Image (cartoon, rainbow, N blue to C red; front, side, top):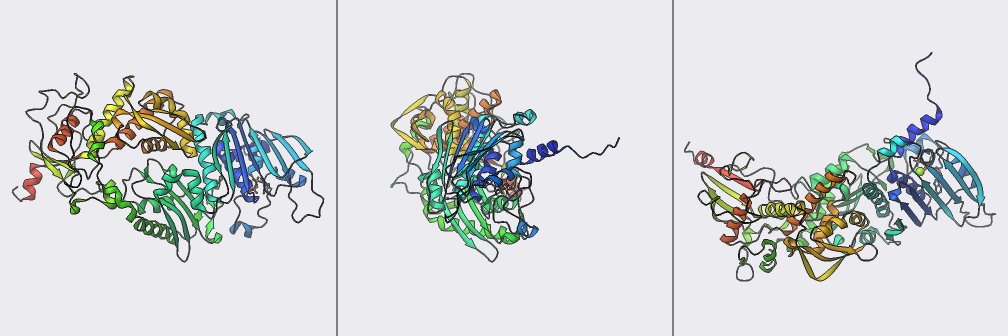
Amino acid sequence: MARVQVLPEVLVHKIAAGEIVERPASVVKELLENSLDAQSTKIVIEADNAGTSRIMIRDDGTGMSPADARTAFKHHATSKIATFEDLLRISTLGFRGEALPSIASVSRMRLRTVERIEGGGQEPHPGTEIVFEGGNLRSVGEIAWPAGTEVTVEDLFFNVPARRKFLKSIPTELTHLTRQIMSYALVSPNIEFQFTHQKRTVLEATRASDLGERVYQLFGQDFVANLVELDFSNDAVRIRGFTSLPHEQRSSAGSQFLYVNGRSVSDRLLTRAIRDSYQDLIPASVYPIVILFVELDPAEIDVNVHPRKTEIRFRNTSPIYTGIRQAIERALVQGKASFSALSRPIPSSQLQPAFGTERSWETPTGPDHPLPDRYQLGGFRLNNPYQPSLPSGFQAIPLSSGLAGFNPEPDPHGDDAIPETAHLARSPVVLGQFVESFIVVTERDSVLLVDQHVAHERILYDRALKGMESGENLPLQRLLVPVTLQLDPRQAAVFEHLSDELNRNGFEVDWFGNQTIVVKGVPAIAGHCDAQRLLEEILSSFDTREFRGDQAAEGLQRLREKLAISIACRAAIKINTPLSREKMQWILDTLMLCQDPYTCPHGRPILLRMSIEDVLRGFKRI
Ligand SMILES: Nc1ncnc2c1ncn2[C@@H]1O[C@H](COP(=O)(O)OP(=O)(O)OP(=O)(O)O)[C@@H](O)[C@H]1O
Ligand SMILES: [Mg+2]
């Protein structure tokens, strides 16, 4: 018997479906693309259980005649291209004629449609209803249907259990789903979108006049205030969109929406150009928010390179790369003026609660203590004190050296108590403050520079995490005036799953109508922070793919670590803030009691050290 055989058609189709339909978000992507290609003006999406049990998309587009509706379920059946030349100049999102049959082969699917007859005069077609189950046609019938097309997909992967197992938790799938819908809502501002999940509105956007208005609708005013507009052209390409000011950072690339000729793509060239544009402005571990539209002659790209159409190939990469860099860099320079407010230190009154009552804290800021101009770390460098190359002679302290004489064991007597004898004899001595941002310290045979922000961040992180892990809820500080917060759809999806843990850990937060939450209390250690921003940061930091709620213990630990990171980062004293000697000593002493006093929770070094050998070598004495 021959060993090489042609596979049965059913199996071939399942393999094809496997490439196209990975998860509910891929179903939504394909169906949305069809609705957009059909010139719809309004698209309604409903989902249950993150789309795993039901997805429904209804549009008011061109619809299909009864004959076309049947043909549409055949493999390689499309109205969008007819010749090879068409493939080289594609202006529609679809072109393979594969989406409907692929989805139909791994779900229970129902399509209802009626063709829009332009100009009148003709007898209208009746509506058509077609039902498929696991790729098998179950029924075709005539129905009364008002306009457009409605597709319902139920029980995705019911007949491919192996595939179903690969689905992630409901929150993760919902995040993917929401992001997919947002992604197409951004690229089509003139189309009305409604997305409800389990009857709750997740996204609602009426027709907008332009991208700016759509961004505002989806993300809210605070978000828009930190974006600058991109609009740049060279001979080959036009770049439009928005990019964030350097202080607005995210922990994942999930806040980057990239498009080429209206197609949502993930493309290394684009992400590299973005990363390189920000390389001196933000640490390598964080991401700016970017909504980027690249527009160029369709003949210059090949869209037929990826089964899910999410990747493309550029014929000539360099004008795209330089175009994006120029677009972003110019926009940021223009946006810099409005950014200067950031270099102001926070008022002393706001510092108090972060440190509890152990020490008295009075920060000499205000008119009597103006910050010397030349020391201002203003503008873009504010959030990036650590350039990749350290000043010569200084090194980031490796974990095994540096303050080796100190016992980093946790204090057995309690949280923050500083043991009387632990370090008196060998305590590092504070010499002063450098550019109101770094504490200068001598310790045995070394000079140390301590980043005051990250040092304090480490201290607060350890406290917050310890509090959460001990099961004794973090102490709460009630806000005088509760604040409400408008969430974007992704944040709302995250909040849905985080709210219990937040409420267990020093927050008092709850839903307050559609996509709005009310914050009544925050953890006491973050009591002086802007509650809105703190919550926003936390919710945004969870739209990373790393968080996997489906692995309970690990997920919970990760969740707590992230919460602690956000709280610590917001609550920690900023750079560009003058500190009294007492405060600096307190930071130093408390830091030494942390388990890892050398790196902050983000992995940045806390201390730089110059040893006596470095000094002697520098002065040519050895
Ligand atoms: N919502 C819709 N409104 C009108 N026509 C539709 C709709 N959805 C599908 N069609 C028609 O059905 C055809 C098949 O759709 P399908 O998504 O399978 O393929 P495609 O969009 O042509 O290519 P691709 O596989 O790349 O998406 C389309 O070419 C289009 O003519
Ligand atoms: Mg399609």
